[in-house]
Amino acid sequence: MSARVVAVTNLKGGAGKSTLAMLLAGALAETGSRVLVADADPQNTAVRWAANGGGFPARVEDLSAEEGRLHKALRKRLDAYDYVVIDTPPQASAPVIDSALRLARLALVPVIPSPPDLWASLRTRAAIEQARGRNPGLAARVVVNQLQLNTLLAQEVLALLPQFGIPLMAAQLKSRTAYRQAAAQGTTVRALGARAAIASLEIEALAREVRDLLG
Ligand SMILES: Nc1ncnc2c1ncn2[C@@H]1O[C@H](COP(=O)(O)OP(=O)(O)OP(=O)(O)O)[C@@H](O)[C@H]1O
Ligand SMILES: [Mg+2]
Figure 1 (spheres, rainbow, N blue to C red):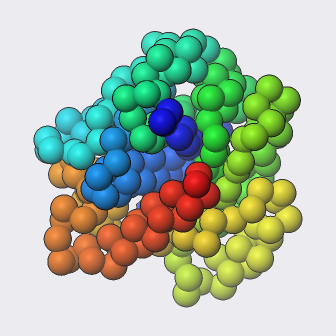
Figure 2 (figure 1 turned 90 degrees about the vertical axis):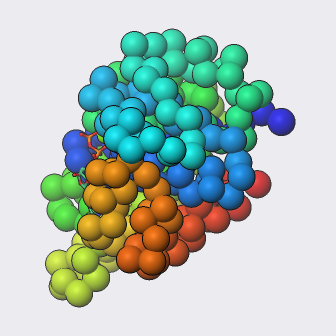
């Protein structure tokens, strides 16, 4: 069967696209799926992450030169994988974003619950709506990232998220050093062992929800 494609996108820089893409890809691969991370961002965060330690369980490739041809380059490869996770650059209207959203079944939009991040993310929603012209089956979900539940502001901003027009994933990513450590060591949170047990559960829940969404 052809791979299910997930595009992780948000024009806001630093929202957590690469972190979410790599944590999700790692968790999907650890349950035995064949996973490709298509790094479509010239910053190559995903490629650097995987190169940092060795042994990252998903294949990670630099496809940033493909730009608007990304969907064509990936289409030929879909049979070899169960999941393709595309990490996109922080842009809204760019050929590479159009290309990623053309192929994707699911767009994941990481959003930090802070007002400027929310405002910026509105343009990401517009890009997803536009992509549905060519890809009507495209589903989209907001993934709350860097959550600090104990702050009143985070609660206030979270309350605004449903107005966004993109449904929220039940799984949320809290602000955790384990996620930075996984990048530093070129690995998954699960590979960090017992000290990252809670982070690992958080990511497994995310991966399960994505699997269920994609059928
Ligand atoms: N849940 C989290 N907990 C702790 N740190 C996080 C979390 N999510 C992201 N970060 C950190 O925030 C920074 C930005 O994350 P990341 O690089 O994933 O964002 P991005 O959206 O891919 O950025 P860009 O737009 O530049 O591609 C990184 O230093 C990353 O380690
Ligand atoms: Mg990135």
